Every structure is written in structure tokens, then in C-alpha cells.
Amino acid sequence: MMRLSVTRWWFFRDITELPTQGVRGVLYSYKDFGTSWSVSPFWMGRTDAVEVFSVGLALTGPVEQIPLFAFVGEGSTETGWQGVILGGDSVLDARGAQTEDSRKFVDKLCHALGVGILVPGQFRSPGH
Image (cartoon, rainbow, N blue to C red):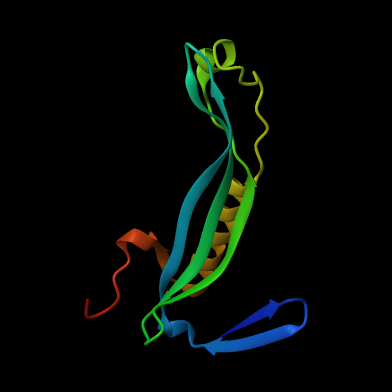
């Protein structure tokens, strides 16, 4: 049995209990959002980003998906020498640990539940 506790606005708490046999897989997805761009006569493009790794559960029951949480952090956009010289991008770009942290957590969750990773776009519920 698995117990999920969701707290909203610091004091509203919902607790859901799920049998671990009802979990088909761990949903794991990636998105990034640009935070800065450079435009010059010779070069145009994104120079920095924020990354979001979302984690959820795919279920076998009537509720097909449960979003759990997201790992969010500073991303890195590799513009190469053209972006640095022509676009004004930094030579060194800071990057958060969200890629490694999210993957470690997802791997541990998959191991604990005995399921694999599912990409949300590839997930199909039973009967569809």
C-alpha cells in the first residue's frame, strides 16, 4: 500500500491510499522554458532556460494519472562560440542539479514499486 499526502496552502491536507499493484509505471517528462534571448545582426537565439522535470504515476484504475511533483532549476543552453561571440552569451553557464536529482529519485521510485518509466506522450490507458 502506498500513501500520498498532498498539502495545499500550508494546511489543507488530502491523503490518498493506493495499492502498489495499481501502479502501471512512473511518468517522467521534461520541459524547458527560455529565460533570455539574444538578437544581433549576425545571430539570434535563446541563451538561457529553466528546466522542469515532472514526475507522476500511471495507474490501472479509473483515475489514469496522478501528478506527484516537479524538479525545477536553472538550465543551460549551449550556444557554442557563435552565441558567445555574436550573441553575447556567457562563456560559462550555471546549471542546477535537477537533471541528476530527478533521475535518481525516479529510478528509486521505479525500483521500490517494481515498475518502469513511462513517457507521458507514449502512455495509453487500458482499453484505448
